[in-house]
Image 1 (cartoon, rainbow, N blue to C red):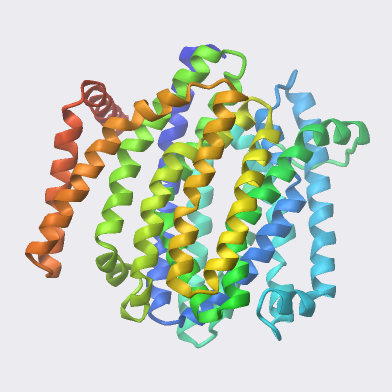
Image 2 (tube, rainbow, N blue to C red):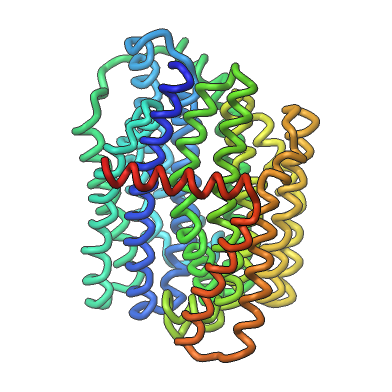
Length: 487
C-alpha cells in the first residue's frame, strides 16, 4: 500500500469512524441524561462495579488478539484467516471459562468489590463475555481493512437497542436491572450483526503453533491491557471499598460522561491512527509525520473542550444529569481539564508503542504510573471525596511524564516537537479560559452562560488563526468537511 493510497484510506476511515463515534456518543449520553433523572446515583454505582468485573474478564478473554490481527503483516488472506480462527476459538473458550469461574465465586467477588449480596447479579451480567467474544475478532478485521463504514452501521444499530430497552425498563422500576438488561441486549445485537456481515466466518480449525506465535506478541499486549485496566479501575475499587455506592455512582457517572464527550473525538481517531501507524512502522519519516498531523488536529478540538467543560461544569451538570447530581460539578470540571492534557500528550503514545510492535513499553509506562496512582488514590480517599477527586485527576500528569521519558530515551521520538506541535492550540485555549472566567463574573444566568460560551469559541479560533500553521490546518479541515459533504 503506497502513501497516497494509505492517506485516502485514512481520510475515509476517519470520516466513518467519526460518524460512528458521534452517533454512539450522542445516543449514550442522552440515555444517561434520561436515566440520571429516573435512577439514583447508587444504581449507577452498582453497575459501575459490574462493568469493572466484566471489562477485566473481557480483557483476559481477548488476550491481545485484536491488536495482533490489526498490527501483524500477513502474507495473504488465507494466512490471515487461519490466525483469525485460532484467535476466535481461543477468545471464546477463555470467555466461557471466566464466566464459569465468576458464577462459582460470584458472592465472594461481590463482597470484595463492595457490593455484598449482589453475586447473582454479577453472574448474570457476565453473560456479556461470550457475546463479546463473537464480535471482537470481526471488529479487528474491519479495523485492519479500514472498513469503518460497516462498523458505523453496526454500532449505530447496537447503541439504539439499549436506548430503546433500558429507559422503559427504568420507568417500570427495574432499577439497576434496566441498565444491565439494556447492555446485554446491545451486546447480543452487536454479535449477531457483525457475525452475519463479516466475510470471515468461524471454521473448525485450530493450531497450537499459530497460538504460540500470536502469544509471543499478544502476551505483552495482554499484560499491557491488564495494567491499563488497573489504571482505569483502581479508583473505582477504592471508592467502592472506602466510601460507598452513592459516591461511586457520582464519581463514575461523572467521569464516564466526560470521557464520552471527549471520546467523540478520540474514539473516532485512535483506531484509525493505530491502523495507519502499523502500516508505516518501517518508515520513520512518514510514521512521525502521520503522528504529528493527528496530534495537532486532536489538540485543536480537545483543548478548548476540556477548558470549556472546566469553566462551565455547573451548566454541564444541569444539562446532562440534573439537580440531584449537583455534587458532581467539581468532578466533571477537573476531570475534563486533566483529560484534555492527558489525551493530547499521553493517550497516543501507547499507539506508537503498539504500532512499532513494542507493547512492553506501554506496559512499562502503565506500571510506572500505577505504582504512584494506587497509593495516591488510597491515601486521598481517606480524606474525603473531593480530595480524592482532585488527587486522582492531577496525578495523571505523572503518567504523561513517564510517557515522555520512554518516547525520548527508548523510542527515540522527538518529544519536544510533541509539545511545540500543539502549543498554538494550548495557548489559544488558555486565552479562551481567561476570557471565559472574566465573562462569568459579569452574570451568572443560564442565557448569559450560553452567550459567553459563543464568545469564548470566537476568541479561541481568533487567537488560533494568528498561528500560520494552525490557520492552514483549519482551512484543510474545512476543505475536507466540504468535500465529504459533497460526496
